[in-house]
Length: 226
Image 1 (cartoon, helix red, strand yellow):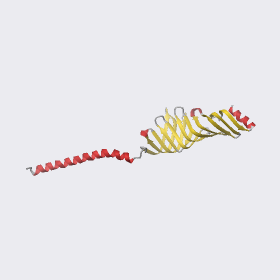
Image 2 (cartoon, rainbow, N blue to C red):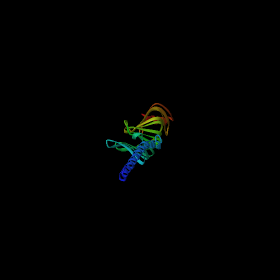
Image 3 (cartoon, helix red, strand yellow):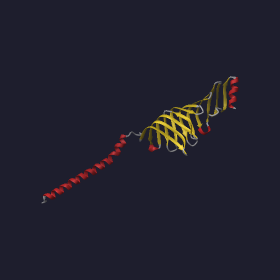
């Protein structure tokens, strides 16, 4: 027969043991259940991080290459892809100076190769005065080129160019395409292929030319092409 003091000691030990077992079970349940709740709570494909009013930019050797000013940034894919909505302004630099200004509805930046893409009512304005409108523009870091893969309209000094698949090579101040091009001026219209347009001088070359001009206007326009 146990004395009252021993019964109290054994009873206390049993209470402590039950409480400890309850704590272990609770910890195991939390550890097991929380990942499931997190996975169910987040929609598939939903970004892991969302930041309001931010800037995404890239520099090479301390010299700015490009900059995106945005309303909202969403980081997904383990940080490999950064999607920006409501692009306020994009800037492309040459030798540290802004030479291209971009407006669009959305931008996506790939951290692996430092490229970006803008879509939705894209407008690119060169500091030389040319204005390019299209639906999509991709920045190709290796060649410092703005690639416009779709239909493009470019307006420059007295000239409107319509084509597809236009490249703007930023360091050279040149826009070019191998495809069919329509060039409209105040004097008439030219069509041809392999356009190379100098954004600085506003001179251009064109192959396989077909022209619709008056005689005097044709002489003047062909003189520009030489």
